Length: 392
Image 1 (cartoon, helix red, strand yellow):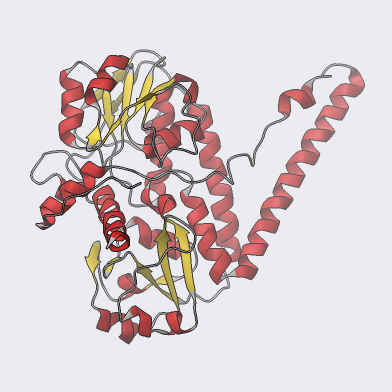
Image 2 (cartoon, one colour):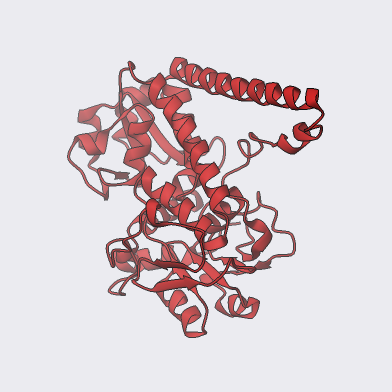
């Protein structure tokens, strides 16, 4: 029974991540749509004081770049590291969902059920980053203690991911790093889009486990369509996260099945209907790192690339060639500029100054949410009375 429970927990984590209003019951401001934050990328700036309004309607003001930052969720921590703001990070979840990050001596702010509020308060942070899955009660306790907490809106599109990254840059004083990472995302996604332009788009079934799937207006739907496939659930008119009839899966007969996996070789937890499809019979299953699709961070690009590589291998190679060519051109341009400067004796150390590890993050494992309280809340909302145990 352990594996089915894990699959169910993963499914409900995804649902709670993108439909937190249900997870929080009637609690105001816990999910997207509770309050229109009214923030777009064009509004974000690192010119202080920074004034932003979060999803709960709370007005956040930072008079200066923060020296002490706490990230409440693994997705918050991942983004902080991605944009180069980790020097100010004094607290973060330290668990299996962030073990790829250099936690060092940072304080663990995770708890068996949600957030260790007392630990966060003791750190006296200048700003607290709270991904949307954070329970509204935890956010309010921190605010009652006098802390500045920014509660992010639910991300349901790639534009939302970009906005989350840029907001994190503004909240941590690393706008330049955030913009650099957004450019990295855009470059890779543009290469994929170009390579897929003339490709056929086969039908794919997103298997979340226990018969659940993702339809229109979900983050997973955009992952699939960006990766060059048609989403079965969206094609049948489904919206949001729902259980899908196995008869419908059989009738639609997808050519591919895509599912999230925490580890290599994980059972996708398919229903009987899915096992009677062309995709299953021809072993056309694509396992995507579950963490890449569970959080609104730059690494979602890797989930898309995984699908493209499996389903459109030639387009994937074309996209990679484009990216390698672009990097080569940039390197040649840099070398030419440096050689010219060196010839004049005016920039002898420019090569050293320009050396960066542009690809250093690509092979990093991907963090997940690790938010047991979100699971418990969703289970409660669904009327499922299970006693949850933390994953090993």
